Length: 544
Image (cartoon, rainbow, N blue to C red; front, side, top):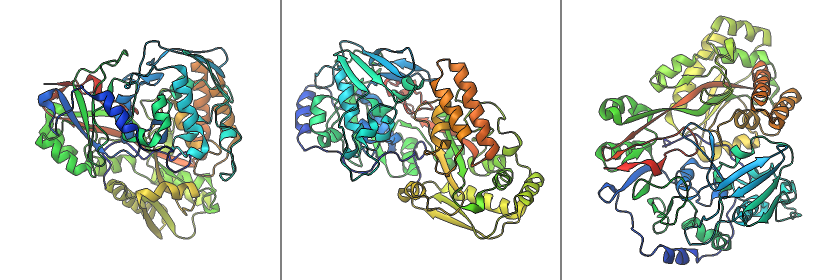
């Protein structure tokens, strides 16, 4: 199955279902009476429009890490802080977010906000939602995004069978209805960026009493509200919230998020005018889409980057020279042309170009195709013995295509003849990596939770977070210094120094940054699809 948007995210936290009982839907439906409902699949005639995407997993903000869920949640909720179209932070539900030491933060909630059911949005609305998501037994999938908060460890014992010592974050204090005091475990200058992540949205008391019902009909504080319940594997209808007082007031009368099981069908419907926006066109259809759509073809840079990781817990991959040899044996530009129509961007850094802190050619010769140098490094490393297994998921057919090219390059350039593919179902792939049962290099990618160098480097390379089993006190120390710095430029210098350490040892090699390739129908205008978790700026779309 082909993904319709974005990358496979890191699986975080525990798995399981949220708590709660049925009944919320009936309550919130009453609050919706008298509001205009969205039309059918072609909603342009009544001022609404339709977007194709994959089916979300959940609509409770703290219980999803899926970009398809974020499509919907970004319209339903205003977080304290949001992102501009160029990735800068901007206050939404917050009036201010301030600190003196990067560890203790004061958040002022903008007055006058209400949830879609009329309940006031207060500091407690955020604190209650965060405590629910951070409490281990609730098994919310975004649980460990709260690990920076004091008290998280007491709510999430290492022994999952042990009873937590607390059910609330000690680092989150409701000072008054408009003020939160947040204390972190350490100084962390990325806190405002962290607050942009959908898991940090508020929840009303009605939702906290019935999380299961809330998943079917979430009550947000954002520019759109639900029209009816979530129609599973079909669509989700949103209409403007009349009581919205924020900065993202819709320029249309609603959006329908239509679910597809494959991108080819969605693209066919875009061509036929049955949907109005598709954020990701299948790679095999891009050339055709450019020709047929003309100025309605919507290219964009992205922050999603593919990597090839090494299982360093397998001693056969212990030599940095072996890992560097494999990196220099891969013709990134050739693969880009053969598989991605030349539209992707061969990696020259551990960070994509849209992220502040990206340095052109930071990876240097180690990310440059050089078979002769690769052979020298391979010989210096002592070579590789046994079967080289290459792991990737079946989420997109392009993974198999470029893995074939990589395998041929390794046979031709390094003389590794015994190579086997291990294509794993997408549903099992990240579980396999988390358990560290792979026996060879594996494809991994990263789509930023929020667009900063820290979000890439710390999550993908730091001890305890990385999947490679790589440990570097030098790298971890530089990340810690960067996180604690109050000076953004000083922080970037430390992040770049940490990047240099990871490049020097190459436990995971960067391959290419994705290109976003979407499209729109003739019925809509002012369509902007960002490179970040916000994706489509649905509130800005105009309907003709």
